[in-house]
Amino acid sequence: MQTPGWLVILLITLVLAAGCATNPAKSSFSVDDKGALSLTCAPETVSATVLFSNETYTKSRLVFHAENEDVIGYLAVPAKMKGAVVYAPGAGEKLAGHEARMVRYAAAGYGFLFVDTRGNGGETPGIPFGQQLVQQDFATFEKGEMPQYYQSICDLTSARRYLAANNAVPIYAMGSSNGGRYAAVAVGTDPLFSGYVGISTSDWGLLDSVTGQGIGGDPLRFAMSLEPSSYFSRISPRPVWIFHARADPIIPFESGQQFFEKALEPKKFIEFSGAHGINPDVDTKILEQWA
Image (tube, rainbow, N blue to C red):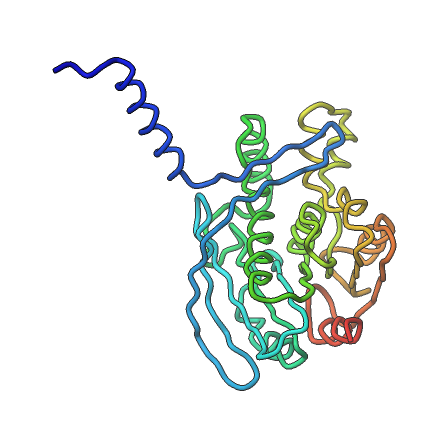
């Protein structure tokens, strides 16, 4: 007996619909004529393994199963949490330097989630930020596909979502050096972050380079979408804290001040003792501000 044509069409339609239902959601982006990035970050599943637990805190290793890569994170949470940090590290910065910091923040009542940025040389694969990544990401941007830079911003949003799922507390994005740049974009594109903390950081300088060469169009839009100060108007009225050491040998103190000047109120610039990057003096000053 021959199957009626209408039934064949109906069966094909149902099969296709079933296939679409099982396909995972994908992240997407748009950048307007003023270079403002908007992100839709696909939900991610997370695998958590408890590494250590005592009366002060519980430390876990997290695997965020993103659409194209697994992204690694390490989380320390106190028994009773009053706030939390999603932390983006600087170039080459590993978890090992943050063990004592996790304990200190937990003792003060704050969760601390270290997100191993793509290409940072840790456990998460990827290309480090630099000329190669910018060129590759721009080519991907031109095709309408997700650049790694934007994916890294979504990773910070995924970390916030994970913390927020079981904790109704303020969650701040914090970053040191390069990580401070990623964190600023994350707060600007994700309105559910409670504020931004930038340490030893500034703009990339890409926008100045592009405009200095008289380049417009897509390269200009793309450069604007990468620059952290492009997002200050979207961070306000959430608070901004910028920390910088006068003796910083990598990102000059003046660059940090110029970055701060672009931020909108409420904001605070705080000088700290040391050289470049987060250190115990920064931690003390941050926890004093939040107290």
